[in-house]
Image 1 (cartoon, rainbow, N blue to C red):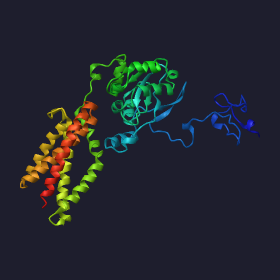
Image 2 (image 1 turned 60 degrees about the horizontal axis):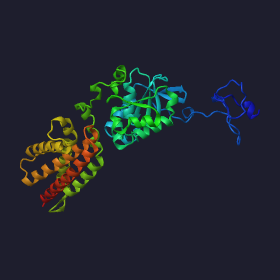
Image 3 (image 1 turned 30 degrees about the vertical axis):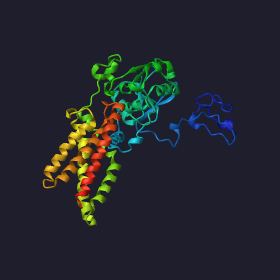
Image 4 (image 1 turned 135 degrees about the vertical axis):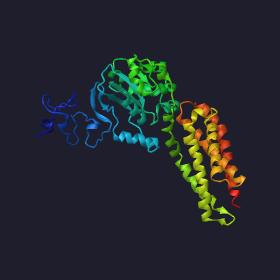
Length: 394
């Protein structure tokens, strides 16, 4: 049997005349060409190849004028839920992303809305889960795995990337309207008139929170004042605090190691017991400052005096230092108390300032200005505290 006789009819027009026109068969049965021969078989989609591993959130595929598009689940599975928890603790945070491209939710058609999203999977999951019964397209752009708000500030979620993706994924062949729903938190990076000029799509800014999208569409794509308001509730702040500590694990480890070694230095040159006692105490004190800045400060954020986060951290650090000094070290000398005060407040101030990256209330220029003033002051306080602590060992 020759290759021509054994070859089937592909679903698409063959590129070679070897295929019998009326042979009733499917592409799966299409036989590979012999060595050196040009294949008459149509290309097989990657997701149909034997070695392909399907993402857990993809339910099936939808045939469209631009090819097959993955349909994603509206509900999060156990893997998605585990990923959400892991992200809150900073595990795999830099690689938690989905592939850029077009995804379908439900059975969207040419009139369905097109929602723009970042490829940070946590954002992607919130969006698909929040759509309810709405059928829509999700155009995921490559923000390097960063959420919309941060990506807009860093320039990876912006006008040029949207225009590029609209053209790259042939969106004009998928929908008949010319409308993109862009999340409001991405607005700082998107110039609507330039998007219009660049790809002929109009930008409509959606609500701040994805869960307001059903109501947003009910109101004919009009956001109420409440949908435009950025809230930062107690729950919003609490869920962010674990990652504020875990992202500092390297600094915490090396600092703890240094404190153990320095704690052993004294009149006996070096003492292991002193290293454990004095070093351990210093580590515990430093950790209390970290908790004050990364946990207590976010919880009490609206009620702490001052606008700068570093200043807010000083207040909680002072309170913790006074509490520790009065309850655990009532008989210690004034030198130890001063060292304790400086160390705890400096660490608390630094950790609280670091929390600005989790808030939508600050601006990059404001954070830079605050850091230029606060970091030298925090560093000086730590050096003085360390010197006083070492001096008490002799």
